[in-house]
Length: 63
Image (tube, rainbow, N blue to C red; front, side, top):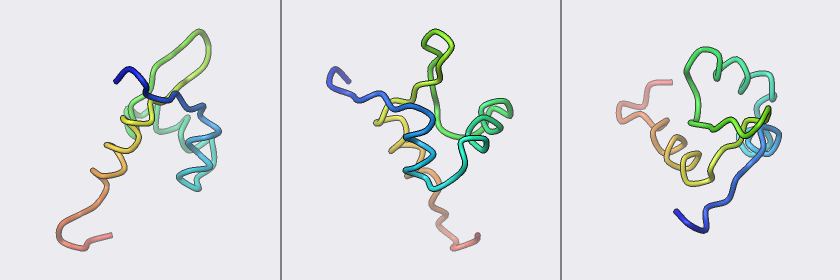
């Protein structure tokens, strides 16, 4: 998407209300939202984050 916004790990952590360390662990485990390495920084596209958030809903109501 041309006008997509890039978010820092800190911005994503604030949005999800999780510690940045959790996002780092998810990245090492291959879990969590998709991200790109730009230099030494992890950056998340807003559209990828929203898609990942939508995937987190379960249809059976299980936690």
